Amino acid sequence: MSDVLFFIAAIAAVAGAIAVVTLRNPFYAVLALVCHLVSLAALFLLLRAEFVAAAQVVVYAGAVMVLYIFVVAYVGGGEEIGSGNALRIIGPVFAVALAVELCIALLGSALSGIDSQGAPYKLGFGTPEHIGKLFLTDYLFVFEVASLLLLVAAVGAIVLARRRRGLEDEDPALRRLIAEPRPAYTGTIAEGAGVRKVLQALEEAHGGIIALGFSPEEEHETVPAGADSANDESAGSDGGEA
Amino acid sequence: MTLGWYLAVSAIIFSIGVAGVLVRRNPLVILLCLELMLNAGNLALVTFARMHGGEAGQIFALIVMVVAACEVTVGLGLIVAISRRNLPVDVDKLHELNG
Image (cartoon, rainbow over all chains, first blue to last red; front, side):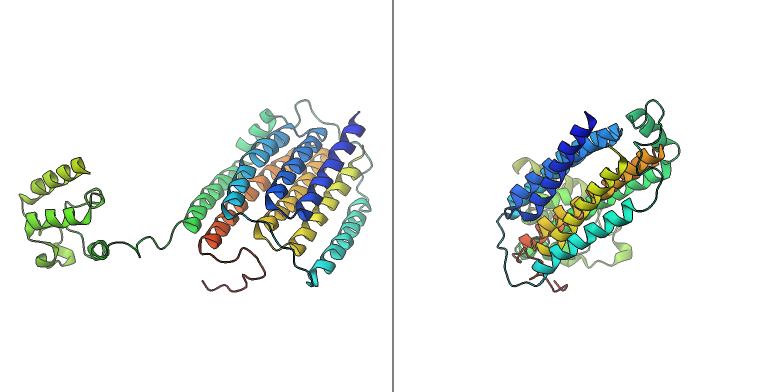
């Protein structure tokens, strides 16, 4: 029974991998990769790795593939496979040579376990309970580093994919305002209501930003005592209108 | 099935991934082929965990999954940035590093 399951899963995995490489439309390639990942999860189950199989289906075939499909839909487009590239002939030849070499290296390695069905295992081998216990005891540092790595990757992806030229087409008055040193009691919420209104509020408070003549150390003392209340009122009314 | 079969499947999947990275020019498909190679490594790790009878290999496979997810996130962010700048989504034409 497990032999039959192994052959079905292995053939599906290899076929999915070949389809990923050969299909021209990236959308179909992503779907083929989903097929590949699910059959690989079946192989993991045959190797008594229940939690890894579940994580494979949930994380990979679920979340990561949705991300891929979104980006394929955003970028779009099939691909023209150009000919005349020497790599297109050398690549598959090299891959076949690599497969032969890896098989020789792995199967001829005289590992005692290669011809066995696997070592005897305790009850509960590979269950979420055991894996979770190991992650929180023996491999706690690895676990924390992995979470930090995920955080760094999330921030990095946002930084990479954000719009960089947001300010170029904006109002030049806003850019001048951002370049100015900011007096106390003004904030980005007030600026969000509109440049003109912030300028107006500053005008009412202490005669405009240009007239103030800031220097960095007296930035906080330049605002008169009654100015913040006037500023707050105007900002509040601005918010109401916006 | 003996465990050698699993290792052979892992080697074959890894080689298919290598061929894809060499042949394809769409960076999206190249990322998919990188996934194939990482998954082949995962299969080998889980096989060795089964061979050894310990769970360290499965922990390793899970960490590889985390690293693969990070790589996909950053790679897809790069591809979105490329297509947003109206550059060609083709690794043969993207041979200059200066932006």
